[in-house]
Every structure is written in structure tokens, then in C-alpha cells.
Image (cartoon, helix red, strand yellow):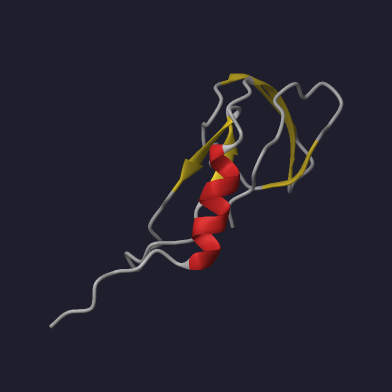
Length: 91
């Protein structure tokens, strides 16, 4: 008989914390191997994002919608002129 999948205790605690925040959503995602990864709390505050890329070019993303995953490689996100808040980096 196959074992029933059990929600890890660490994830339960994180889900419980996230449920108390009305300004965040809890996201589950699969890695490249198809395995479920630990959930991430992604903010729902929209705004602009000023990014410094590895080659030192500056890019401004205007009106980034809350909860959006922006697939970029950057060495820094500026706090000056960046109005999007509570960002989470996915590695």
C-alpha cells in the first residue's frame, strides 16, 4: 500500500503564518525534477522595480503587478525609486 502524502510540519507552520497576512499569498511550486518545493510567501504590493544587472545596466520595470515572478538575473534591486515592496527572490 502506498503511503499517503503528508504535509511537512515546517510547511504547516509557514502556511499558518501566511494565512494571518492579508497582504501576501502562499505559492507552491515544482522544481525541475517535478518535486514539490517549500512554499514561498509572495507579496501583493504592486509598484516599480529598479534593477542593476550583472553588466551594470539599469532597468526600470514600471507597474510590476503584485505576485508577479520577474525572471531576471540581477546583482541588485535599488531601494531608491523602487516602489514595489516585500519582494521575495527565488533561487
